[in-house]
Length: 115
Length: 114
Image (tube, rainbow over the protein chains, first blue to last red):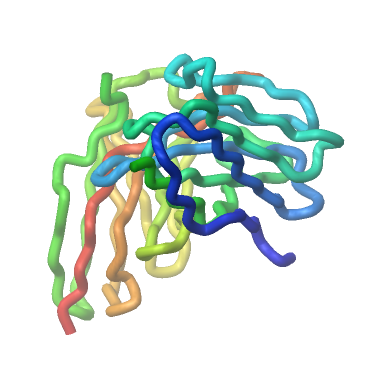
């Protein structure tokens, strides 16, 4: 069990650029989640996958955001045409089955700064 | 619409005493409640959870109490240790398939004073 790994740890970009983050979940975990956290707030749900199927996407997620989990393994989160309001910590988490109070294992996050 | 509220942004407790962190919620559809702890530059780590049909769950130094009629839960840490200094998040979960996500509160920063 090597834990949930996220890459990169930090990303600085200029407004209007595209960025992509990667998450490697714990290998046997079927569920993979993306959350976003801004300063002084709790993590906010973005989207989640059961294996390769994207089951839910937050209404707060604009069309500039897209996530994939090909083959049900690692996942990528892409933000197109970044805006300053996208600056946040992007957290990935995984769990075996999900729901019923099952704990999520979080990665250390990717800190995005949009200048 | 803040479905999960942690009204105390910070709390300081002396080492060895009890720490009590509070959380209120508005969504009656939550089936489970979970507490996570977060250190700087790390992701949240799971502490303890409770089903909405229970009123208490205990795990070592950590106990969570749920008062469903008041829509209130609390996390008790006894005795408090310096390593408990962190930000604590309360979260509610709805467990209908395809809708299992956590809704987090804004967190309480706990500082344990040696």
